[in-house]
Length: 308
Image 1 (tube, rainbow, N blue to C red):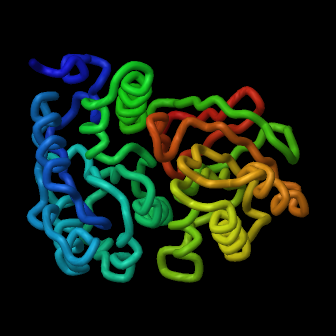
Image 2 (spheres, helix red, strand yellow; image 1 turned 180 degrees about the vertical axis):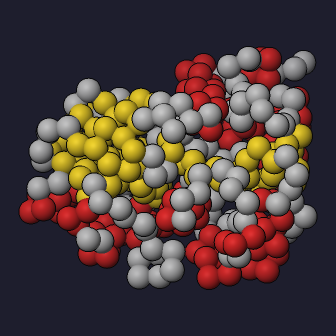
């Protein structure tokens, strides 16, 4: 029987424009069954999934060699009538591509993903290209398998992609933790904390414009590792350019008797930078899409980004 999710008119993650979507694996290797399920679900939704040639490849824990992943990356953006380039998963490996991307021959097609994809999203932002911090494509399979409130949350997260792709205004609920509580405005940046910290000092370092609102999330890390990454990231940035830090989910992160909020607050306090948390993005069922680089307003009433 066809899944109810497939029937849902709300689940049009890429909108109603051109139907071709390129699927790439620029980082970790992807399970074959996840690939097959993702392509099948996209087809049932009326899309034309174009799985790139090396998406099933494996080199150690990576989705192929650097050369294979680069070939797929460049080819995906040059497909005819492609709506978006959607990463199948994160993992590790995107930073290996940074010094080899041929930006001059890369059409302006939006890139979708999160986690390890954060490095690429920031690079796109730095070059004025469209990038969405959004669920990866294989999470369609997780959505199909989910039930109850988890299913509803995953469906809402997938459905949020379309409005961001269309350039619409958006909103996320927030909770103020510490620091100045006056409204601030600036471009949205960030992504996975561990990934961004590891790229500090390299060609994939986080792009930080003035007034930036730094969005962070992570998964499966002990608190001391999160602190190590946060200190590394902060030390690599011009802190005067940050207007606020917003924390999404930190799934399966062992924080012991402390919390990620307390740790981050301690390091931000000397710099008088506002801290907010409980934003609905990151690893897990609540992963609302947001536009990297889009101007936004942050206040106790929420995070609101302007239309394009």
